[in-house]
Amino acid sequence: QVQLVESGGGLVQTGGSLRLSCVASGRTFSSYVMGWFRQAPGKEREFVAAISWTGGSRYYADSVKGRFTISRDNAKKTVNLQMDILKPEETAVYYCAADSSYNPSRYSTDWAYWGQGTQVTVSS
Image (cartoon, rainbow, N blue to C red; front, side, top):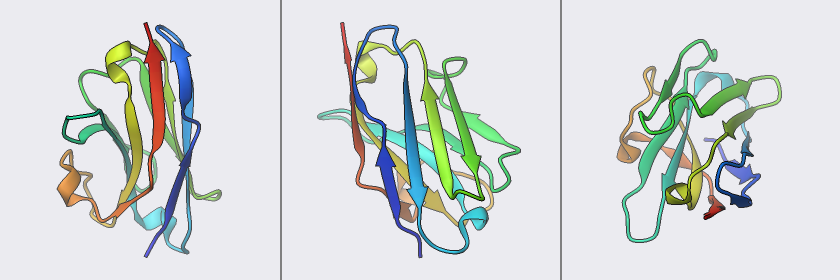
């Protein structure tokens, strides 16, 4: 069992940056793949990025490659998402997710644990 709490959302102008953080509870954080998803109003939840247990492998949606960076600190039980050059269409609630699978999935239904989400608004 793991509980996730996100922070770092807010309002930013087009082209700006935000850094999201997710803190996990539980003793086995290093055994979970971690991911970030987002959901805009009226749209399905979509994959943004994921990172392997050790942080050695990182995965990104094509739309964010080169602009977003996912990282984790297993000692601090945190996973971060650095978001640069943000676009208005990336306005959404961003969710942290965890799963005990070996390979992270791009499908939200495959993830077992979710945070409550943090709002990111990119103004044009």
